[in-house]
Image (cartoon, rainbow, N blue to C red; front, side, top):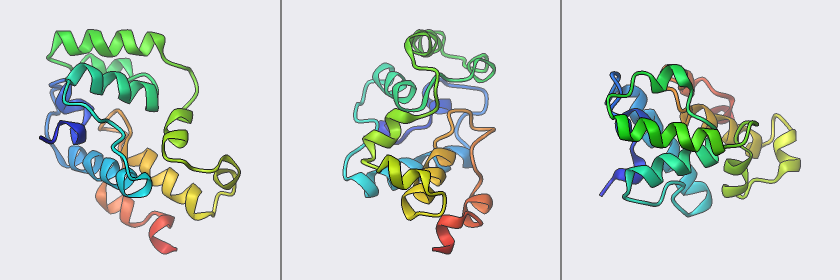
Length: 142
């Protein structure tokens, strides 16, 4: 059972489907799991997974949702987005037990790991960091 690691484009059955970007998403979920010892998206139910993604990361961009071929899941994502907050990812930081004070220090290990996880967990696969970009990230220069 690997649904907890599936990217939004896979759950939404978007036209981009499985790709290298999906692998980066999985790496982001795995990195977060190694950091905090719990799964960010701990369900086997696709609707619950989408709701949790929106809760932790914010609304799924409308342009990306238009690519969804799964009408039911698109409606779930739209409804979750309407109920979501407007700022970027504060719930993710709390879930990862990252200190807000340390996150403000841009060169701190906490800020760097939070930044790369956020980039790996971009809800839109076209905006997600690539493997080559990730390897150039300051987190890997610590």
